[in-house]
Image (cartoon, rainbow, N blue to C red):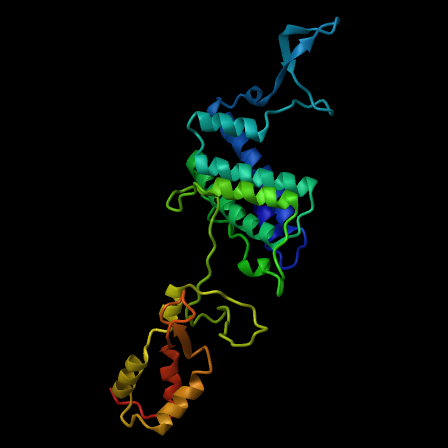
Length: 311
């Protein structure tokens, strides 16, 4: 699993999703088999597949023997078989199992088809993040092993950036079927549970003084990478109405007046998204009236032209 994460988290790796899915399924199969052995007194033969012995006349006899691979090694039960058995015995969480099946489906798609759409990458990120989270939880629940010493952090969002321009998301038939399958499995997902089918990934920005914090800047440049904010996030960013801004200014500055200087400064700052945003009072209705809202950053800019009151 660490290998899967390290491959995925490389800054520029063209086959990251496919490689992650293959290694992730491998890690789950080994973990499931280890847990199966624990439940079966460590009897290695409990993992083996048995087959009827073929008689000389070509018919199947009553005796069984261990089925062998092409190299002569014992043929073991598949991940799907062992997982379904543990699930039926109440030893495997349903959401975790649905997530494993989703990763298997992604793995199968990766092995047999070529996937090129952004939607495939995004869904793999959500399913893969849940897979890592579930993996850590399962090892803790099943073997009381703590994996905090390892860096189990998956998939920085910046490494799965959407295309800069696109007319529409075009999926092949195979990709469309895969996404539909994952969506159906994810529909029963409960975000409050310890195990998940998929993890919704949200990005929020907050002011930080940490020296290596990511630098971001609001921009009106149409060529900038778009970040879509919810109405709640917009309201948190632009907290002040015009009346509230004036009230804050009167409290903050000893020489503040509602004059041409203030209105000219305010108008200039309204052109910068860092300080102000014009919003529809009814966001869903483009014909509704508009109103300016201001971020608290505008006060720091106004400090340059006014005298702050002494505390």
